[in-house]
Image (cartoon, rainbow, N blue to C red; front, side):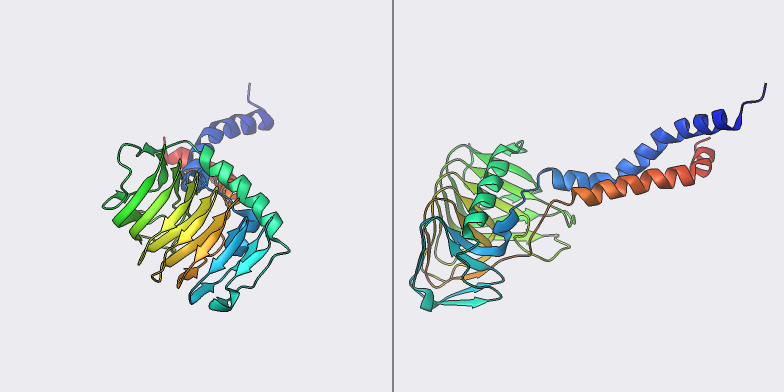
Length: 274
């Protein structure tokens, strides 16, 4: 007896679902994988420098593409030394930004670890690919740390540092098709971060306590975000990168598009596969 049209349609659809899922996941996987380790700064994205108690500057510092603010404290010392380009002093929204920072800090600290570097706390000389790198205590940077994006515009690097971060070197990114250094690099620091003289640094520093940039024109592509302590500046250049937000919605859209394509062209795929 001939199958009814409905039975045939359901049978064909059932055959296409695995193909559709496979095809859609192949298309969407790079985006899903990229956003799995994403840290969303939320309202803190609007700040280039955010402190808990005070911001202090004792030399000529330029801050680009982001606001500066303090919460729950309210003091900014040496504001006359600071040149703001594409940003402003924003104290009113700093409390909300601190809440977003706390959430982002917790997210970063809780991510699954790609590699534990506790036994090799010196970052200088390493070349790392996208992932989550863990240090149970402190981490140091002398020389050059190279971050290889592998040509992925959604590459994410997260550094989980249990106590302090101290630098006297450089962070450089290679194979970055987005050409926006520091956008998706996150340094979760359990206590305080100190960037030394002539440091060329990339990434968003999320410090539980304080952040200090030592005299000597530290060049930072990223953000200085301190939860409870102060941010201290002295003759530095800070350029906040564009806000980076998880694009899970885009990945799901790609997944849906892949399924739709398979149902629309199911017969052709079935023919190719025999």
